[in-house]
Image (cartoon, rainbow, N blue to C red; front, top):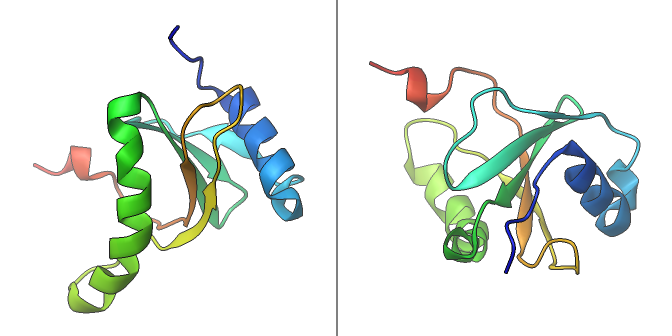
Length: 110
């Protein structure tokens, strides 16, 4: 399979088609991108995470299952899954919408 271009246009299209209640919210790429996912702010309260390759796509279902179970047991906030997107022709894997958490990226921790 050819490399998929994961950009704001794709994120906007996926949200608009699968979660039309959020289609009018702004979408912009997050500055500090990880390796496994491409992340986009969705309005002020949410984020969209799109796995960047097939090998990372299995994380989506695991996170939707486990993050809500782990959250009450942890001493810090973790992202709350809000919705799981389905594969489409333009993007072949499941993807997620989470609640946005303010703060610094863990990548900045020293």
